[in-house]
Length: 487
Image 1 (tube, rainbow, N blue to C red):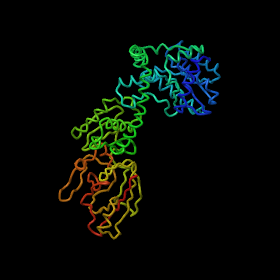
Image 2 (cartoon, one colour):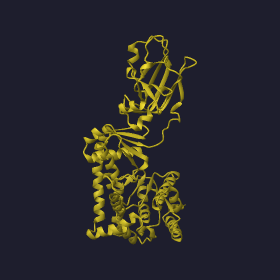
Image 3 (cartoon, helix red, strand yellow):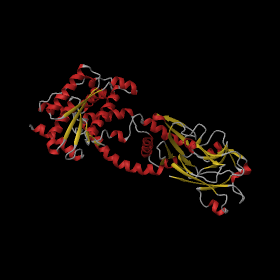
Image 4 (cartoon, helix red, strand yellow):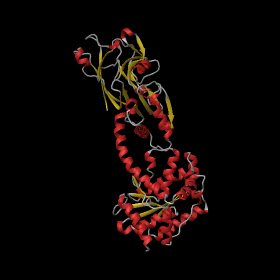
């Protein structure tokens, strides 16, 4: 083994040790395309196999795009894996058809299929790790690509050496070093012509941008990767500060479908931290940040100075709305309540028997507390026979006593409906919608209120106002005790 080969292996091994990528006795699934990068990764891991007592399995995905060339790649991968004493599982997929079905580019669909198949293989083979062959040039391309699209500090850090069970042992070496290593061990590989097709954005960076940067400085790729590593250290510190700010500024509901950002506290942050808090808030509402660009973050940040009711529409059905002293972000899904707004048509008055049961309601906002609860436990009991006094009726804010004698029709627990009104006593009636506005209840949470009503007459807003005409005034009243607890 030449000195250059030994140095290459040591460089990769040192990187594995530094980033704790592999443990003794680990099982590894490796993505093997037959190209130079994955062939290099296979050869390196096989050279380290005895040191770490590794079990290695390869997965090759035939994308159904390049006809005979794809078949050639498949056969080459099977032969090479056999020579290395590694099992190789081949998957055939019609990527063009799947791209149409999933409304993706072929590049995106191919990546989705590959990682799904890698995950299946990892589970079936009981392998802890998935190794992919990204190298330093890929890292530089990723950083430049994200810069072009608009990104934050996280995006500028590029790909991580390890994310969940995915490891990237070759991030420390360049494409040129990979070619040199393969030449030194006299290992051939196959070429995928689509890798040089400049119709793809990443390939355009690979074929046009990076060569130009290397004309300026031959170490451009290494310098971009070094910058990404430094930014990763900065990001770790920055994340700690932003996590503190996020906890102080943002309230996310338990189902992660809505979040409220306090604009006053947001303005107390440096702008760079404030925009990162917004980015983190969006991340709480969606599984992917792929289509969220820097301009979206800036638009949301700009809402802090806009008039009440101003609204923005973002990818993934996310809406951002200025609501009084807050910016509310929510997923714009349909109301989950029934067509008539009822909660299981739960009638609480009149009852044939003076027996009442308990029930739970999902997703309830209590306006006095300004809190959203994933579950609200409600207990309804007949309290007519109790000796009620002013003191025992008001000492618990989560317990309300309702006189039913003036209620016409049946009293139902439901969600708010159009046309709802509430009796304000000497001030007459008020539309429930006006109460919500006066109470500064965010629009996205108004359909999450829970009310006790008969027809359009609302007698109780849970965690809020109670109508004057159902106040208990006489010991002879028919009284309900309504107790609720959020969790």
